[in-house]
Amino acid sequence: MSKRAAALLAAAGWLSVCGLSFYSFLVGSLDPDGCRKTFMDPNYLPTSDFRPNVSFFSGCGQPSGVPVLFIPGNAGSSHQARSLGRILATLRGSDGLSFDLFTVDTREELTAFDVDLIVDQSAYVNEAIKYILTLYAGGHRRPDSVIIVGHSMGGIVARSLLRMPNYTPGSVASIFTKATPHKAPPIAASRRMHDYYRSLNEFWAARLRVDGTSAESRSLMLVSLAGGTRDTMIDSRLTDVSEIVGGANGFSAFATGVPRVWGSADHRCVLWCKQLVTAVGRAVFAATDPASGRPIALGPRIEAVEPFFRNRFDAMAGRPRRPPLVPTRWRRPARTSRIASSRAAIEGQADGTWFERRLLDQPSAARVQILSQQPVKVYVCANAGSEESCFDHSFTGDALPTALPSKKIERDDELKVDVNAEDSFVHYVELDVASTVRNGTAFFQVEPSSFAAIDFEPSTDDVVELPLDSLTSLIPQTIDIPTPSLQTTVRLPRLTYSFFDLRVRVSGRCGTRFQPVIQFASTCGAESRFLLPPGDGRLRFAADAECGQTWRIWTDHGCGSVAVHVSVDWFATLGNLARRYGVNLISMGTGVVLLAVSRGYARELQL
Image (cartoon, rainbow, N blue to C red; front, side):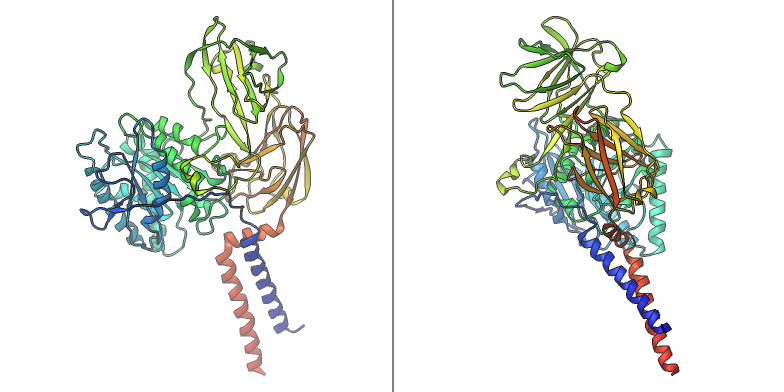
C-alpha cells in the first residue's frame, strides 16, 4: 500500500469515528426528555423611569410583592422569564405572600465572549436593583433585597454584582443560577476571560469561606442547577460551586436528581421545564418569611430550599436534611389493628383503620423504614392515655420514580402546579424514632387500595461495598447484591470515571408489589439519578465522581437479593466523546484530512 493510500485510509477512518461519535451524540448519548411545557400569556410592563428598560412581568400598577429579578444569559432575552413568572403567579400564597418578577433587557449581548460586557451588565444590574427597591416605598412589606434568578452567563453577572463599586451591601439575598458555568469559561475566548473567572472565584471564596465575618457570609445564598447530559452548550461539570461557597452558603444540584424532574434538560429547556421551574418557584417561597416578606436566616433558608432540589437521603454538605418535628396533641384512634412482627405488609382499609406497634427501647428500633404506594400517615406517641403527646411524621417522604415522567399535559391543567396523575412512583420514609419518642407507640394509616411495607428493625448490614472500578466496569458482569432491608446502600469508592456509559439491567427474586428502584449518586458530589426505566436503563453521569459512587436500592421484603448486570454501551460512549471533546475531534479531523491531502498533492507535484 502506498503512503498516499495509507494517509487517505487513515483520514477516512478518523472521519468515520468523528461522524459516528457525533451521530451517537445526537441520538444515543442523551437522556430522554421528560420535561413538561408551561403555557402562559405574558404581559410585560416596561418601566418608564429607568433606561435601558427593566420590565415588570406580572400584575399591574404599583408592585406589592417580593421582588425577583431575572438576568438572561449569553444572547438571551428578557422574555425568557415568562415561565418563571407564570409559576410564581400560580403559587401565590394563601397568607398573602406574592412575588413580583422583573427582568432586565441586556440587548442579547454576547457575554460569553467579552469580559467588558459582563462588567457593564453587572454595573447596570446594580443600578436596576436600586431602582426596583425604590418602587416599594410606602408599602407595608418594604423589601431591602431582591432574589436573583440567572440563566447561563446571567449567573456570572449576578455573582459579579458584589465586586462592583455601585453594589449596595445586602441588596442581594439569594441567587439561583441555571446552567451557569461557575468554575471556568464555557468557551476559551481569551486569556482575559480566564483571568476574570479566576479572580471572581477567588473573590467569592475569600468573602464567603475565608472571611466569615463579612455580611455576605452571614446572609447570601447561592444555588446552582445543572441541566445534565442534554445540555450540549454548557458542560455541567462547570456548574459546581462547592469550591466557591462550600456548604454554608449554598449548594449545587443536577436536574436528574430534582424530585419530579428525574431527567436532564437542555440549555433552553431549563428555562421552561415545568417541573424544574416549579421547584425554583417553591424554593423562592420557602426562602422568604411570609410575615415580613424578607429572607429568613441563612441556615434555615438552605434547609428549607434544599428539599426542592435533592431528596432527603442525599447528604448536602455532609448533613442529611429532615423536616423539623414539633410535638403535638393527638387523640388515639378508636379502631386500631396491632402489628406483631418486626416486618409488616399492610393494606389500606376502606373504614380508615389505623395500625399500631409498640416501639421497644432498644438500638435496633431507633429507625423505622416504610415503602408504600401512597403517602402514609404516621404518628409516634408517648403512652399517656387517649390524648397523647405525639410527633407527626405524616409527610410524603421521598417519591421514588418507577417510570419516566409523563409529558402529557393539557393547557387547562396549567393552573394545577402539580400535574402528576400520569406519573408513577412509590414513597419511602425513614423515621428517626430515637430523636422523637423512643419508648412509645407508632400509628400508621394507609390509603385505601394502597399497600405499605414496614420494617421496624432494619438490618445493620444494609451497607455493602463493592470493588467495581472504572476499569473492571468495562467487562460485562453480573453483581449479586443482598438486600436485607427496604433500603440497601452500596458503596463503590473506586468507580469514579464518568466517560463510559454503562447499560444496567436489574433482576431480583421479588414480589409483585414493588419492583427494585435504584438511584446512582456521586458520593461527595451533587449529581444523582435514578435508573429509568427501573429494570433496564443506563448509568450516565455528566461529571466524574471524585469520591466514587453510592447506589441506593429500594425493595420490598420479598427480595432477598438483586442481580445487577453491568456492561458498557460503546455506541453511547462515542457520543460522550463528541460531547466532551467535540471541538478537539473537529480540529484533529480537519488536521488529518489536510495533512493527507497536502501529502498527496506534494507527491503529485514531485512526479
